[in-house]
Image (cartoon, rainbow, N blue to C red; front, top):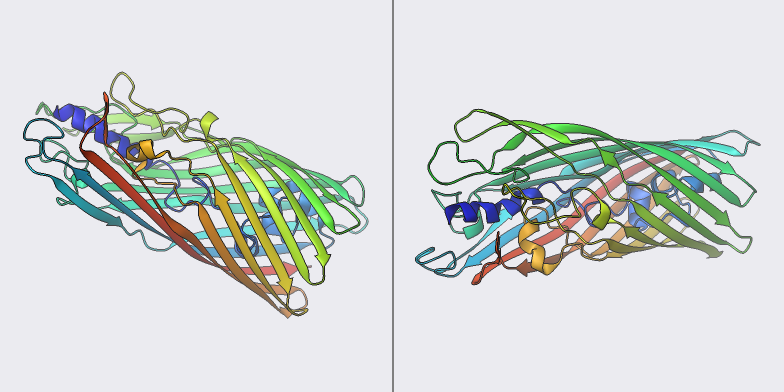
Length: 439
């Protein structure tokens, strides 16, 4: 029975592998850079700035008539809470002896996320080149061990929970980009993407537990020492502007194939143990439309499909034959992003943005994802830009991801456990500062 408790609670650990503690749409950010963030991330069909254009649609840099560079720094904070309830005798006669219920908060502080973009072109040339460097996602979960919250009590034999949960993830993507103006209104673009990622998590449940000390209670090893991984992918897009101020775009970002994360750890008695985990980033297909026919007003609307269901690390769930957790069981999601930009004066602009996405985590799978609840669905954004000089723009953006919660039962190898409940809550906020220079 104790082994089953550990096997069931091990599902928590695999949740640490996602980037959802800082994530917005599933496990990825909604927008990149101060301007694109304040537009709700909408950029596929409306080229507003270099950062949004390079990340969401490489063809849209063909719409720029000047070279420009941009740098943004986002300070991101997530508010994550985990609660659980276990009725008396849920795990067998006298286990626990009385109903237990508690809540634990994870406070990882403010996380910095940098973004850089550069678009260069020559006069009279149909070719435009660019380079983007994006902090795609990053997370940190730090739930302390808590004797009042059943799910964070120590692992057997000293408890029947999972103990403290720690995780840290960073991912940087660099995208050299080229676009070609087929006509004055039609552009196509392509961008290979190079990725670097770092992952640390403890405990680690994507491998089987061990009982090396022979006490009858198997436990999962730690992977608190981070592992790094390199990866690659690509993106292509099409961008078209009509004479009547309408613009349209399409882009496809492939799966980002990462090398397996490889960890050096130890078992219960300190002997060496090595293991790895395969986690990729899903492909994204996006369409967008923009309109600039109103005086001083720009509008943008995007729709995306994020294919989690066919991505390594996300498509499977449950235990394998040795008690290792196989994956997240996330559903693919649709994302809708909308933004408007209003030019108050020649030097000052304001922006409003909103985005919505499906929840990739089904309520029945709450237990599988308690350390990485990618459950925020509604996002609001506001921003302002001021140009102290003709070629320089300073921008500020604020983002809020509205609190969402899901709850479901604990799971053991044989299915849900009656008389139990696990609940996750997530709310996010960020402030982004940006500098844009045209030349």
